[in-house]
Image 1: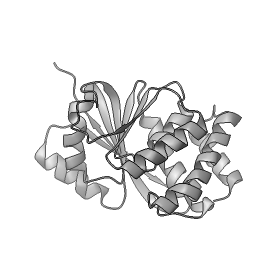
Image 2: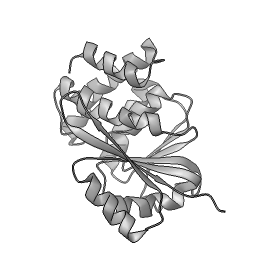
Image 3: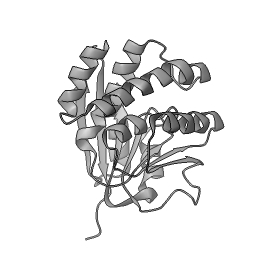
Image 4: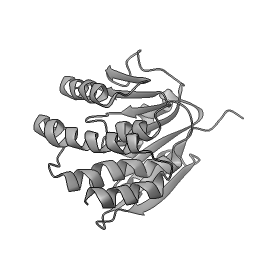
Length: 211
């Protein structure tokens, strides 16, 4: 995917995207290519693949992302948290990862991109510095199985908050496993397909408000 095609696809999701945000997305892609790949935080080295399979894929969450603070669990190289932050610059965002090299890259990328209202935490999700019942959403991409992810996200979500997980071919199996454990849990699946033909699913799990 070249930059022109990426720009066209992104504007389908974010029609109001401005030039500054677009340039930050391209700069972030360069950082993933030049730094994150060398650190082993990204498995893609070609810009065309990074734009489509990392950035565009991450932004598939955007139509389902509620207003309010969100937390990216196991953020790694900042996916999906940094692309979402770039297009939602006023939103308070937490990027959480327990690995030193991931946090070092996130701090470097945040400084290069000039991102504000961004907390980067070197911590496990159980750590006290990760706020409880605070987030409108917890987002995640390629971290762990959905059932385990729900256990991690639940304490962090405010009532009415959502877990939004990007899942691949095994998404349906993971939804069925979570539904078996929690039969009344509100779960929705939103399938999509990238221009390269690769399918994906945004899984949305709601933390119900107290009745």
